[in-house]
Length: 251
Image (cartoon, rainbow, N blue to C red; front, top):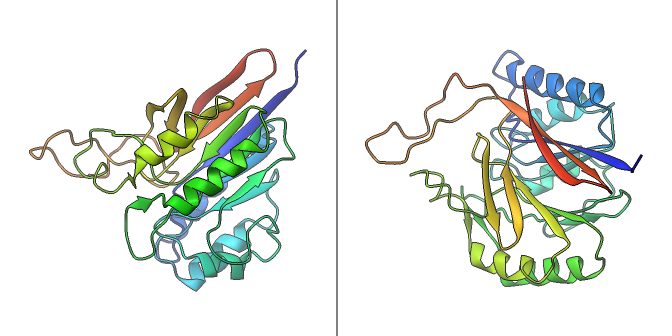
C-alpha cells in the first residue's frame, strides 16, 4: 500500500466573542472531524478571527491548545499579523517579522503558504517581492507541492468576490507555470466551495466553517447573502500511487 497524506484545510473560522460561542463550536466540530479522519496536518487558511481583536485571538488560542494534528496558521484579510505572532508564540514556523509566508517540508507533500493580505483592505495582493519569494521557495524541491493562500487567484464570476480577490493573479500564474510539481492551489475567502485552475494546477476554494455566501452572477441577484447551504472544510488526500483528491466535509 502506498504512503498516504491527509491535510485538513479549515478556513474562514471568523472566531468572535459576541456570538455565544457559535463560531468556536463550528471550528471545534471541524477539528473533531479532522481527528476522526486521522488528518496528518491541519492548515487554517485565514480569517481566523472576525474583527482582529485581542480577545478573539485569545479565544482562538485557547481552543487550539491541543489540536488533533500539527496545526498551522495563515492570515486572511480579517487578521492582524502582530496579534497572530503574540497569541501563538510557539508556532515557530511563523517568520518573526514581515509577511507570514512559510514552507512546510516535514510531510510527504510540501506545503508552501503565501501571505498576501493588505492591511486595512479586503482584497489580496501578490507583490513582486512575494512572487520572487514564492519562485525561490518552489525551486528548492521538486516534490509534490500544495501552494496555499487566502484570496482566490481565479475569476469566480461572483459580482462581489471577483472585486476583492487576489490582485495581480497573473503574476502568480507566471510563477506557478514554471513549477510543474505544484499539484494544488488551495485558498479560502469566498465562503463557498469553488474549483478553478491556474496554469496547470487545480485551484480549490474552501468553504467557511461559520457560514456560506450565496453566488451573485449579476447585479440583480443578492450580493453575498448568507445562505442555508452547509458550511464545512476540505480534506485533501495525497498518495504516491494516485496523487491528489479533495473532499468537502460538511458540518
